[in-house]
Length: 47
Image 1 (cartoon, rainbow, N blue to C red):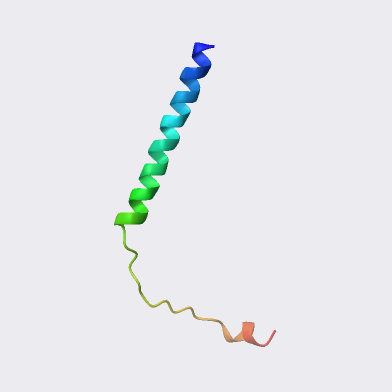
Image 2: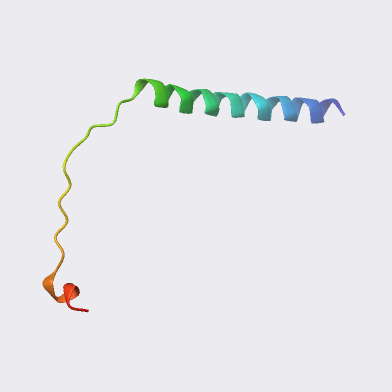
């Protein structure tokens, strides 16, 4: 039974680290806005 608790604790710690990393990315990284141009071939327009 102690190995089950150790495994669950390890999973909880890993989930906490991943959640903290995602939270840090959301809070501290700003996306760069830029214009995107996509060329559409004219043969695709008539279908």
